[in-house]
Image 1 (cartoon, rainbow, N blue to C red):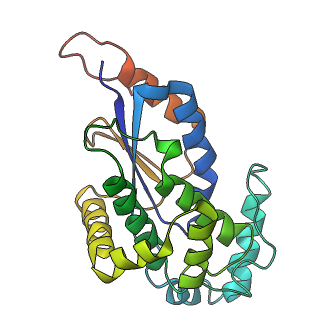
Image 2 (tube, rainbow, N blue to C red):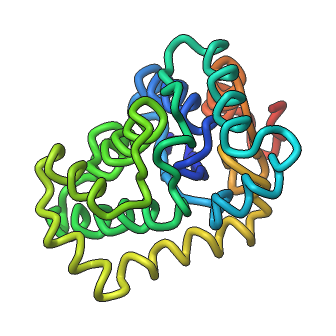
Image 3 (tube, one colour):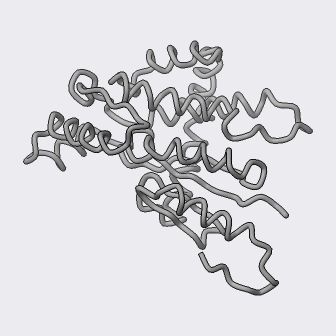
Length: 232
C-alpha cells in the first residue's frame, strides 16, 4: 500500500508551526515509511513589522505580541520561547528564511543520486535547517530574516553557504518559493500550520493535536473496500 501523502504548509515565524514540529516528528516516528511528508511554505508574515504594528497597535505592539507568545509557550512545555522575542531583534519578513530553506532543498536534491530513494523527512537537510531557524528565532530571539543568521545555520549544519547564495542569486530558490506560495493559494490554505491529505480532501489547520493527526493517517491507511468513503 502506498504511503499517506501529507503536505505540510507553514510559515517559519508562526509559533503554532513551531509547536507542531514535535507532532510531525512523532507522526513520522509512529508510522515510518507509511507516511510521506512534503514541507511547503505559506505566507503569513510577508511584512512582519507591518502586520504586528497593525494587529497589535492597541495591545502593546511588538512588546504585547511578544508577551502573548510567551504566554502561549507556557501551555506547551516542549518548546522554548525567549522572553525578549520581538523586542531586540525583529525579522522584517519570513520570506527570506523560506528562500534560504528552498535553496537548501535544491542543493540537497542535486547532491542525491538519480536512482537513490527519497531521503526521509526527518533526515533532510532542509528539515533540519527549518528546525534550526525556528529555534534561532523563538528560543534565541535572533533575526532570522538576516542573511548572517542564515550563514551561521548553514555552518552549523555543514552546508557550504556559497552554494546557498548561488541558488538565491540564480533565482532558483525564489522560483521554488513562488511555487509553494502559488500552491497554497490554489489549495485554499488559510494559515500556518496546515496539513493536507487525501488528495486535498482533508485539511487540518491550526493548533491540531497529535491524536487527531494520528487518527487521520490511520484511517487513510486502513484498507477500505473499493469505493468506500473515508470516515475521517
